[in-house]
Structures are given as C-alpha cells and as structure tokens.
Length: 352
Image (cartoon, rainbow, N blue to C red):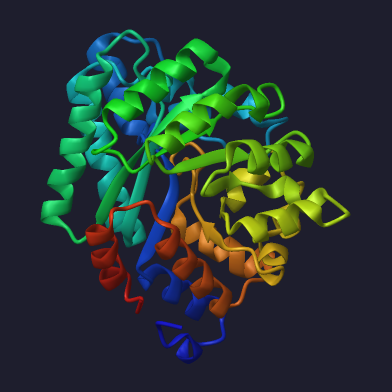
C-alpha cells in the first residue's frame, strides 16, 4: 500500500476527509458528461438554442439525473442538452478546460483519461480534426499549469452504424500518436461485439489500446463475446459478469488480465444494478479481478469521484485497503505513455 491508510479515523467523517484528500486516477470519464449546467445555459443563450428553462435550478432538473432510470437507453436520451452544447470551437475549448478544472480542483484527480465520441459530439457541424486539436491543446495547456497527467480516448458510438464506426476508427488511427486509446460505447445488446471484430483487429494492428463498454446492460454472454472477439485491454462497467452463475465470465476476465472500469452511481442509475449495495465491485475484487472506480458522466449523473469512492466504501463495503487497490490498479492500467505514466505515479503517491 502506498499511503498510511491504517491511520485514518474509523468514522464516516474520517473516511470522507481521507477520500477528499486522496490523489485519484480517473480512467472512465466522458467529456460530453462533464459540462456544467451553467455552461449549458450560457452556450444555449449565446447561440439562440432552445432549453427547457432559463432558470438554472429548473434547467438542472432537466439536465441532471437524480433518480434511477428505466434503462441505459432512457438515460442516454437525457444527453441531448450536452450534445447540443458543442456549437463552436470556443465552446469545445471552454468545456474541455472546465472538465479539467473540476477533476483537478474538486476531486483531486491527478491522472485523467478523457474520452469523447466525435460523431456524437460534433457530427457534421464542426470539423473533427480541428475539434480534436482544440481538445488536445487545451488539455496540454492545463497540464502545463497543474500537476495532472491527461490523455484522450476516441469513442465510437455503436448506434451511429458501421459506416461511422469505420470513419471513427480511421480518425483515431490518423491521430494515433496523439491519442491514448479507442472505445466502443452505447448499447451492446442492440449492437453486439460480432459487428466490430474487424475494427478491433485493425486497431490492434495499429497498436491502439482498446477499451469497450461491455456488460453494462444486456446479457453476460455479450461480455464473453467481447473478451473473445474484441480482445480489449479494459472493459467499461462489466457488471453483467456477476450474473453468470457458472463463474465462467469472471474467470475469463481474470485470465485475460482485463481491468474493469466500474462506475457505481452510473450503474445504479442505468439499472445495471437495482441497488448500489448490490454492485459487484467487491465481489470482483475478491475474485482477483482488477478494477478501477470512475464517475463516468459526473455533471449529468450528479456525482464526482469523491462521491463514487464514498459509495464504494459506505454502500458496497470496500475497505480503505480495497480503495487503495483500485487506485493502484487504475494507475497501472492507464493508457498514458510511459513518461507521463511514471509522472502520474509520482503525483498519485504510488510506488512502482
């Protein structure tokens, strides 16, 4: 263990103080889910966009998700306000800078992997390459001013179709020296992994790290197929592995050495689990699976990494030693290049 966690007072207040102070790695965070409500409103006003309300408190009720939704698909429908906020290159720069600010100053994040879907976020409205360059330069500017190490992951949104999938993969390959990885997101049950085997093979041939949203909804068999066909380095969520009573999917995850990027509040809101207390994070750790803890879409899901750590402790039953294990797991599984990764270990206070 890298920190003196045994000296933490055994009380909710003591644990919360410890969590807030703890330097954190974040591997699973969508840029589109990091937009502050006030930023949504100001961008809408600047561009003359329609919003549910111009009162910020009322807007928050339509923007943030406070209660458990019907499904992942229903939750994703709530992202339209965020999606419409990428109207100009100045908007992209502001949103990216504020995402870095919130992670660093509010959550003490020292290793941040930001991911975004260019087709979902920009479509044909803005140039993908110019948008990427702005995101990349903004992140670099923040890194120069603050001790937080950052990387960018490109996402393909499954519901946008195979043409978009190949376009996004080609875009990632063209920028492979500036990104750290590629992700497949959106509904796995509607768009199974078999559709993307050739794309995954192409990305691996280009030595691009792959993480895949899998086991967030649908059947655990899809997760088994993802492991076998797509061969990701990491899996986003992975909750459905716990529903395989034979234990084969959990065993396959462990054997592959794949890290699960868990997101407790997100998994509750999308009904991947019915209750936070039922989240299998602790079960995974006890089975020897490497896990990290993330906030997914903090502004939309009304959470942050401090809250996710506290849910893991107070609701799921992780000890502070388990939290430290997740922190170390995340640092080692990060897609950051070697030099930045070594610096991230220093900022996180983790000995290699």
